[in-house]
Image (cartoon, rainbow, N blue to C red; front, side):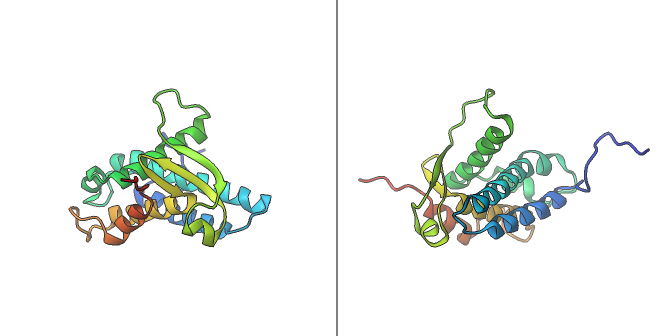
Length: 180
């Protein structure tokens, strides 16, 4: 019987996990718009898979995998308030979902009950609201922002010094504007 110091089911590189993230997003989008309990459970499961994969891709797989894209570590270090909020939300939701209660740090993300609170939720149906660092993401919006972020991180032809305009537009849409 073959044994391994690092047993896995076919995923051994950050590229494998990146492909899984794409599949997780497709599964979340396919879980669709349904308001019935079965549809919402499918969305919950798919969202859990996506968020946990995104968190571990950024936190574990890219930093610790030697076969990563050449510019990926530099891109992971680039800061933008909205992307930091999205990544922190993924961290808090993944840890809260896996460990039930976060005790090693104080989470700053809140997840609101499903509702209609922006154009996306009006158009595509009731979703969880995710609040982090002055940003209010819909469940699907957060997933799409994280996917666009990782598309940029994995693209070695994309500038390290410039976030894609479409990505920043998605993030800026989620910024909660303060009344003056």
